[in-house]
Image 1 (cartoon, one colour):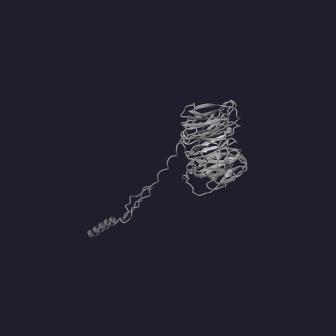
Image 2: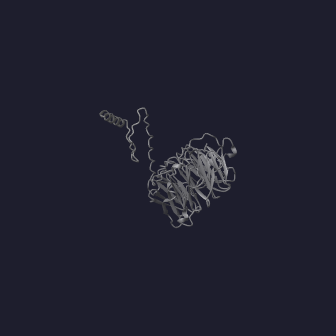
Image 3: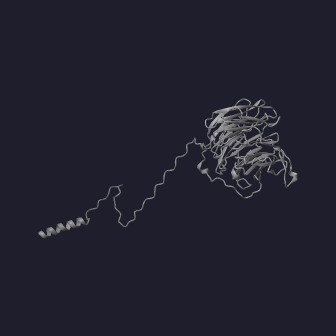
Length: 446
């Protein structure tokens, strides 16, 4: 009997050691601390990706929407010849990016025409409510802004055929028409003028003006505008009113006027815009006007650093500055004036439009330089200048400060004139729009 009890106790102890007790279920949401077998590979879980960066502040300078970022355009060695497209009506405004990567034009048929590099036909057209009066494209071609007589400012990006946003200035004044627009180098900021109002936009803020500034002085109509590449300053010009014209300089970050300057109207013509230009950092401003003088301002002084009289009876119709403000081109009196050093108020040379064609003597003649607001355009470092002839439809290119025109280009019709012209910032491509037959001409600046 004693042996049986001993045997029973030993059996119970053995069962206990073998784990035959009732298993315990762990509570829910508690992971058992199980040690893997010795031969099991310890797999490291994948790293948790970092959170996305916070969006940039809304007041950051030159903000480009992420979807619009693409590689900088590269030089294209292909020879496309002359890329021509006809709209059938006056082409009021043109603009083009580096290397002719993208280009845009608009005019009296109410349409915007958008082109890709090397293609004569538009990639798309967009119809506004009225005449397209002004267009400005960023240096990369990623984005551009347009102004129409329908009172709207239109902003496009990313090759999209629909505006990213548009702003109707008629909500501020029911009779408004957009006269001119401008955009910074990267396309982050833009500006526009109606007859009485100045608008400054951060283009990432969906068309909500950063500033709306009423300049509605009696008898003055705002007509021209330029914005510095860094978005710090805006210069505005008026048309002449029979007494005088005005030029205004504004701080684009605060909306405050820095100065204004009056230009005496000598009454050679009525309602002619005062052309304006500004350097990349806003430190140099140039303007033409109705008193026969080219003016240049530096810093924040309202008094011009110098004035240069181009003729006894002629408007200064157009001005264009290099990005550093050290070189200037201007047209008036059927002449082109080039200032290689803007610290000196005397032109380095004057060109009368004479062109000597080594291959065709019939083209060797004095054609004159057209008297239009957009008759001259200078590249960012002044390596190339293009000047246009309003009467005969010729365009002249000048390289590296040389007084002799390197080449002359022609519109398709002999009885058409150049209404608008622009050279790409890098100086390699030109776009021009015609006044009568609606030709949009693009070519490499040879």
